[in-house]
Length: 206
Image (cartoon, rainbow, N blue to C red; front, top):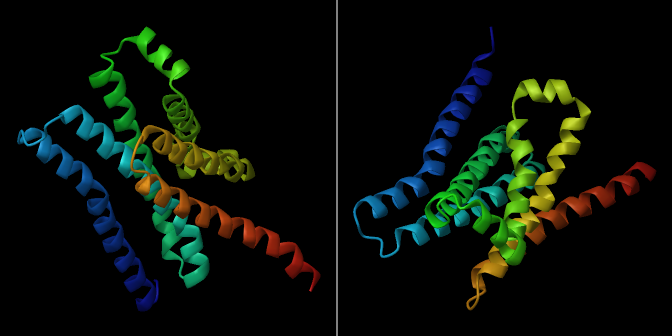
């Protein structure tokens, strides 16, 4: 039988995960309400931009869990990381489906032409391709099967995040404020990882 404090921590973590799950769904519920109520001037554009924006937000939050754990010393950020990563892929899937279905009406030749001729779509699809195997292998079963290769595979999240920010940057034509913010946050998160990796050999020599 677990000590009482441990049970309390587990209970709080479960409640926190439930609240986090609801929080991650709120952007989708808000967008759905606006579209279904008829308040959206251009529903397809709203869905596309909303799902794309929240893909980046949850992806960056996912990447922020490891630095948060290291800086705070708490273990709960790592326990929330998988859920956040799957929500990032969920919104990305909705983003891609909106483009293929509502924007291109499953016109394969037009989609291929777009991917080939429009760089921001090229890097966007590349990010989707990189994140797809990460979503598939996010279960405990795949972690056991892949063993140490699992961690190597999931490092693809870094180039995927870079491609995602680049996709948004190239998409925006005038006000670059938001792409710059996303790029700055991503640079900070990746920079912290590089700094800690660089510090490891130095610490080993001490």
